[in-house]
Structure formats: structure tokens, C-alpha cells
Length: 156
Image (cartoon, rainbow, N blue to C red):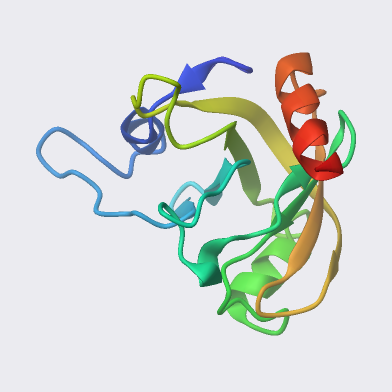
């Protein structure tokens, strides 16, 4: 996948070998993991509306700066769970975490927006549990247009 290019969720799942023409992935969550590849994709919507997201999935995801990203895990993820530990111990376990971000679910014409491949990220720190608030360091800086959008949303 090309860094900072836009992809549909289906294209990402195919690239991660989780979906094929014959066997389409049923994954609808904000994460997708291929255990055989030791790789996980995080799907982030910066703008969340109550019509598209339930109160329990209105996660607080945003860019801290061009190189750091604040992400909240799914609500059931505890720091002591196997999933939580896989994030905390990401580097020791040599796990690849890929971050995909889109500004909103749909564009101005109502079409589904693709996700921008922000690139691989590395665990920095976490706070809390259920959900965990995790800071990821991007291997390459976030594209300027996405950083501006995220910063604008964070300011309010």
C-alpha cells in the first residue's frame, strides 16, 4: 500500500489477506487483525456523528501533532487483556500496527470516503482501560491536510 493514499475498507482487508473475492471479510469493527501476519489495522473516523456512531463508539481519536496520534481502543479492551497487552508490548512482539484515517464517513455528496493510509505506528504510552487511550508514534509524518483537519476538530 502506498503511504498517504486513500483506500476503501475492502481494499485494505484484501491487502491484509483478510478478504478475497470468494471469501469477503465480515469485519465491521474499527480494527482488523491478521494473526498470521502479526499485523493489525486501525480504522479511524475523525468526525463522528450520532447518526453513524453509537454513544459507545464515539471514540476520542485525534492527531496530537504531525507525528503522534491519540487513539482509543474498543470499549471492552482492558490494559490487562490479551488485546491490550498486544498493544502495550507491540515492539517486543514485533507486531505491525497500521493506521488508516478518514475525515468523515461520507463526503459532501454522500459517498463513502476512503481511508488515508497514514502508515505504520509504534506504541508510546497508554492511559486508562475499557477503552484504553493510546498514543502512537507515526513512522512518517501525517499528511498536512489530515493533520490540519484533525487539529481543527481537536480545537473544536
